[in-house]
Amino acid sequence: MGGVMTTEEQSERINLIPIYIMGKQYMVPESLTIMKAMEYAGYTLIRGVGCRGGFCGACGTAYRVLGDPKLYFGLACQTVVQPGMYLAQLPFFPARRAAYHLEDLEATSTQLFSLYPELLRCLGCGACTKACPQELDVRSYMAAGMRGDIAKMADMSFDCIMCGLCAARCPAEEGQYNIAILARRLYGRYMAPRSAHLAERLEEIRAGQFDATMEELKGLDENALKERYKARDIEPK
Ligand code: SF4
Ligand code: SF4
Ligand code: FES
Image 1 (cartoon, rainbow, N blue to C red):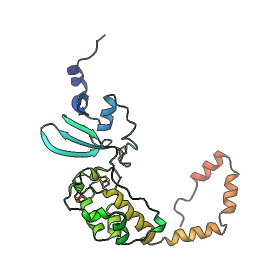
Image 2: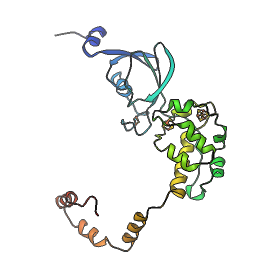
Image 3: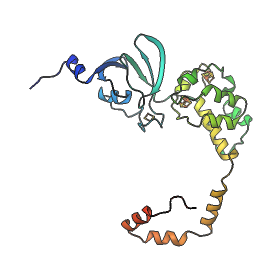
Image 4: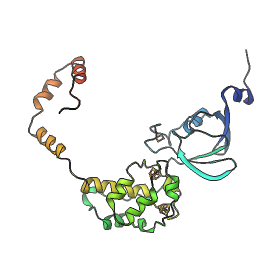
């Protein structure tokens, strides 16, 4: 029967490495992500965690590695720990977010600038691009916004997960992701080509083309529904 393992014994068995969470050292397995390492160290994550898959942007983290002066950024659920990592969670950044009703807006540069006048203060320094865990060219999408190119801003920011790390580094105090989501909303509502297929399908629904099928489905039991689901035509010609 062994007693409690010393830190050295544990390290030999599962390669524990030192990391620093909020300034305190913990020994954690080297294969873990930052998020799993924090849980291994005893933290219960309530804020700063969501999808655990790199999509929701809730787990923004700033870190340095011992001996390296550079400040790094990453998603805690995606970034693997390194020895001597000093971590600080940034689950929320208090960037300004304009209030608006999309239906009342116009897809113009004037609209963009009136809701976010700070957009025109961007210095083009690129600190935001360096911070983005999605590797988006944030500086360039901001430049597109400054030119009033809503479509370009929407397109270039499409993979933004709203983590806030770009705003954390901005010397001009921009809330880049809030401006970019406005561009995407304006593009989607007013500029994107309409889908003819969707319009046709809505018309068919309104005309009652699927009423009888819906009634029939509502009368089926669970097993019959599952069979119908499996046998469905996934890509009707
Ligand atoms: S960090 Fe701020 S000022 Fe610098 S390029 Fe990005 S948005 Fe502009
Ligand atoms: S653009 Fe900003 S908010 Fe969006 S993913 Fe990149 S760092 Fe996060
Ligand atoms: S928990 Fe959602 S991106 Fe990390």
